[in-house]
Image (cartoon, rainbow over all chains, first blue to last red; front, side, top):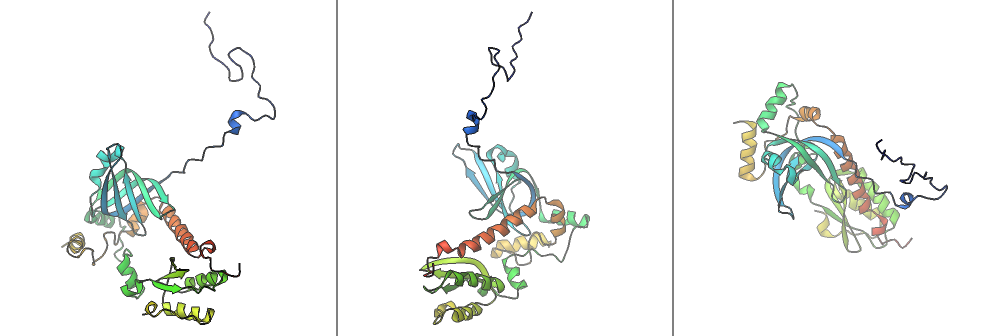
Length: 232
Length: 67
């Protein structure tokens, strides 16, 4: 007669039933729950490859990072060493890549990366032809690069130069809140930087005309005088 | 000369293309073939908002005598 070696989770090897003490936390319950793994979002993006960087890892293996321009955002294509031999030959500058993989967003610097699992590489002409055959080509569509974004807004490149607004030492927090609302109400091409206690800060907001900001500041802060170099 | 040849030639000679972008005209195709663009766009929108908020963050602006 064969010995039955199976052990029920409720019984010990001695056959004694194990009963968890009531209201006493099990050792597992005392261990902090491990940080939930970052949710992996699978995406498929198309972009024009504008640059490639090859990197040697600490273990001497090669990996590659490509810079792609999409129609509405830029992203990096990351090829790890395990896929390097298969995928890196597809990273051809000025070709259009169809990249499938996991999305990684860096909240420190705003960079978007796709860790590639598959890549398809097409020439611009091939893809345009394919799109035309599928009736998915719109000849009126233009990708908004820096230059044609300026043109579309009726501006010129000089307007892209940041304007520095010194914040008077007596300014209140409410002043800054109101300034932010004001800047947001005048969207345009000229980036606004503010200087507080000698520290220059990019507000990440752009206005149509920095003179409006100066006028606002004069009304808000008695005796406000902009530096001459700040307004052209 | 094709569109591709023209923009590549411009990029080689002056560093960037003036006739257009390699993806011009391809929006409907890209819309159809892409998956998950909304995640990237939402991330960028959130990032921009947080950067704007950071620029005006009160803790970084020790200027208020009222507080």
